[in-house]
Length: 98
Image: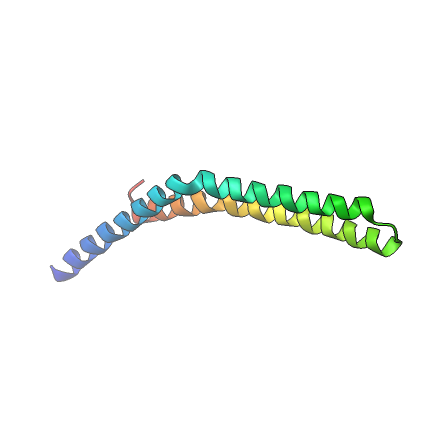
């Protein structure tokens, strides 16, 4: 009986944690997206200026490498932005509160 009570309490507490995580993500999700978009715009402008003022071949090669890094960073941010809600939904399904 004690194990059943502990399991029920554990499931209820996990369900409450998942619900709190969903509420938290929903409350500031737009701000996370805006912050990532602002970082991409600022970094993209910086790289664009570096490409525009690059006179030597080495500077151009470094600037192109920075563009590749920017694209990789955008892909990683997109994967994280799409993966976080899926992870929370998977956690809620695992707990059983669908």
